[in-house]
Length: 194
Image: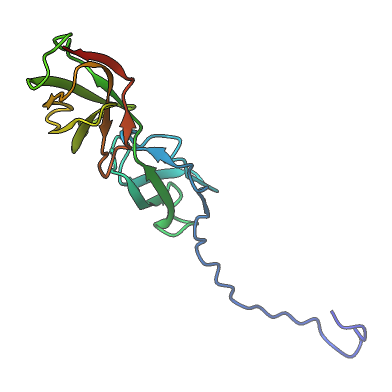
């Protein structure tokens, strides 16, 4: 509308504006480290978006990861396909720490035993979380210097130790650990050899 309306007519003009689809904004905080044996669930898979839609995680909920560092990813599909692009993605890093273990000498040893005669020692390694049984080896050490080493099968095993001198001694079992499980040492038990 011109100021000099006597000299000018009213004029109009237009332009075309292209409004593009927005990319959904995903917020996904880095999750706290977990322990081997912990299945992925909501505390790790907790991404949010600025619009309604569905999340598809990889790895998926329920997956148990071995110890290590992983990249978790998510694909978000918005419900509103008109105003938002079809999909958006995001990722975070998750640390999976080895599980703690408890080692126990489980057998009732012949007590007292006899010097020079092998004594079988049975042991069990129990993980702190429910998962595949620990693997590796366990070494049984006597306070008098004798020792033996056995391999774990299904979380348990045995070895035989021969005492070279008479008298009482304490026995402890030490688990060597594996890639998913930490080392641990049993409570000492007393053994006497006559």
